[in-house]
Image 1 (cartoon, rainbow, N blue to C red):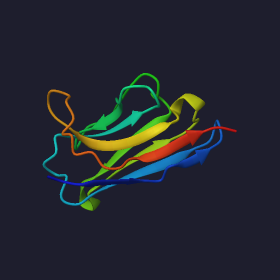
Image 2: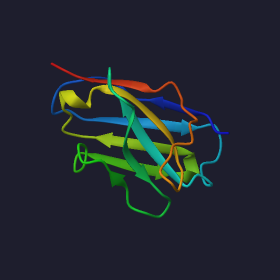
Image 3: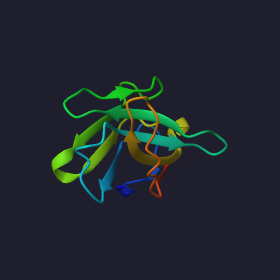
Image 4: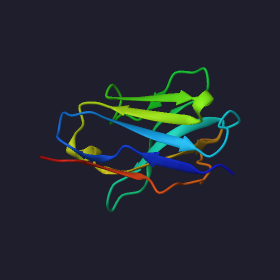
Length: 118
């Protein structure tokens, strides 16, 4: 099992940008896809972006065109570049592996809080 540590969250104004990082305790080479999830208060955790090695990222509709996921296997790190942030992006963001069936590996870290507000 690999442990993930997310960082980079904080308070951002609407329209602003933020880059999140997820560092794994070991190699992520074997992980089918790496994903970023988020959970807003009172809502279920949702997958917002995932990427397989050598493939383009896949995004949920609410973030498409605004978020970019970058996977760096050499650094065992996955990034989420977020631009044009909106208040509805406010959530705790987590990274995890995503299996071939689309289910998470459930190796959750502590997450990192992103708050979009004036």
